[in-house]
Amino acid sequence: MNILALLCFSPASLFHKINALPWYQGVLRTWADSLGYKTCDSILEVGCATGQLTQYLAQCGAVVIGVDKSPKMLQKANAAHTDRAHFELASALDLPFEDNQFDYVIAASLINIISEPAIAMHEMTRVCKPDGKVSVLVPQTGMMDEDVASL
Image (cartoon, rainbow, N blue to C red):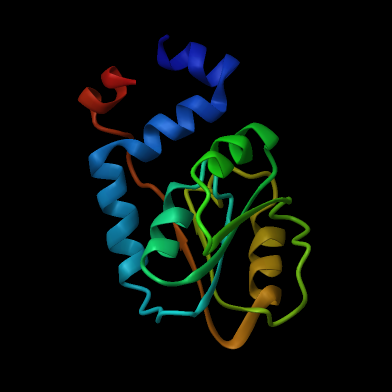
């Protein structure tokens, strides 16, 4: 199935393939590791897609909740569920959490594709503890040609 077909008919499969690319996993893990979180810190990943980064953070000892607005994305995420990672259906524009709940609130490749990024950033800041961190990863130029071809 080509990339356009995946995008049209199976976005969850496309995002799962993108998140599994070695260079993209490396980018995500380097970014996540640079945040300075500690074991048992609470992390919210907004726009978790199929959950690979959420799972990685959980394996590193954090308590992580991943949210996404796509049930199909979360179905793939839940297939690899671990005890320290949980997934919930939610929109970045209306996060279903209390104020000041998380030590870290992160979003990878989300802010650049949603309709109202300012609202999402406000929500992310709202649910982050006052001494916590909000961090977003925004891609720059496109993916490498060979990676697109492999999809």
